[in-house]
Length: 326
Image (cartoon, rainbow, N blue to C red; front, side, top):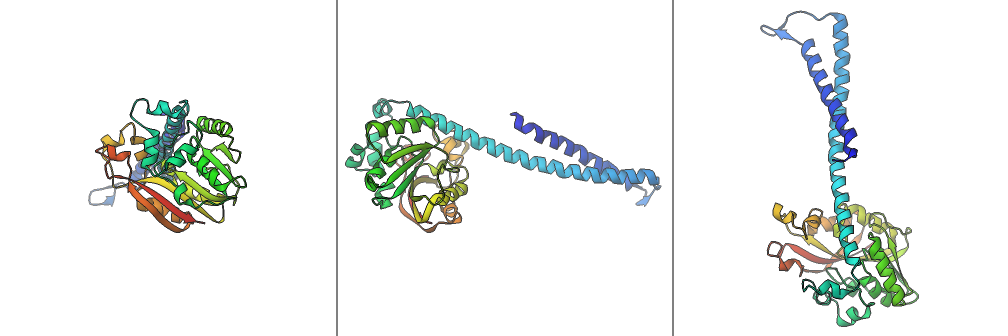
């Protein structure tokens, strides 16, 4: 337990004291005996004091319940921060790998086969700078309908796989901005852009809920298996909408879950932290709608190839591609 809980615990202790004061004061004031008749009146001065103590105790009780609510909110907030920091560390470790061969050397993960499995062509895979791998769950570029001259943001851009593909589509008159919360990933993507002479791509450090972008500045927002990591998806989609130009659009590949999961799955080292903030499909789409997007459509839906390899997750984690407009 960290220091942020201390004020709340003090509030709770004061509240318990206040509750005790209220109960004792009320009992003394209303003390009865025999068949419900008052035994004796309390002296006027004492009665007045007890009334004041009852009021003070009641206010302290309110403070107690406020403390309980704050304790719950702080607990949830700290859990969200822990999840985000864990993800940053995970992706920072991936960014430290020099090239894709290190990722697949153990045979546990082949980035080329993974990219093909989620819908990328050989031409797309070979066109990105060397060493840039895909860790997504779908191919938003295939259905984004990107046009020359458009400004695109890739949310959770990672090493830049989709950002580099988008840069080819929008051409030299267009621009692609990759935003990722991991500084190591941004540094790696920026270096890849330099080596590949990709002049219409730039990368920034930022979180989806707090994008480093101007209002009404983006034509298309794409994302690949990242928004699902946001604990508050409604806040994330509202922030994405803020940055879009009028009639701007989103094309997002993401993962959603089917039903709930037992404790042993939630403690899984690979999937556990993500499952703690994952949404079901309907909940996910409702967040998109509540954020103000129109024309919401799921253009692709299938079981996650990665999750299918795990018996406990088979058929329970679904990859979808969602389109909508501002």
